Image (cartoon, rainbow, N blue to C red; front, top):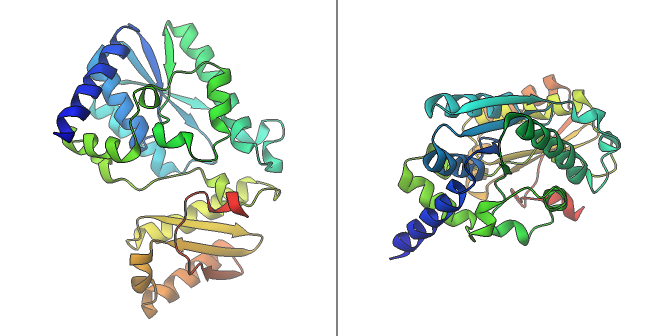
Length: 269
């Protein structure tokens, strides 16, 4: 019964998108934007284009997944190259960092969509995002970007259920946030820091840790893992390998947060 209601709402959202005739979708390869892009493709076929922002704050792995999905689904895909560190104020890492970045990304995508004849630019915020501290939502409202998942009340859990039903590989993909979010507000963001964080998290992913954050506090790496994976981390071989690899990357100290993974952790610092 629950799936029937979700599918009915999904159908209504597709009809809503279909009425737009031609759209661009801001696509990050995450759970939400993949689900939205798939729905737009079903609704409009060839009249949909995916835009993916290429940033220092986005790991290459995410870019590769975005390219792969669009190729698999035969969706026109445009990489929007940007340097977020050139956005005024961004590198100083203020509390509205996300707003500054999203505003520039969506301004650029919106202008591109207008040039290419897309009637609307869509993005993948969901109903849960109303409750979190997300300055980027302000930029979305200011620029009048449409958020169909939010408009139709889809929560993250519901998106995962529907994604699994539709056969999307992202249905159980761990939540992701940009690499800049690993650096406490007020500490300068640099390319070197972002590259160190990307390499550190890649090391942990390769060892089988799915939901990972490496928070950077000057020369200290503070690792957050899901509580269920803590025991694996304490295996001597794993622990030693992580310590050595992260020190080779440039961290002087390698620590583990005993609280475990918490989304938006630095918002409370």
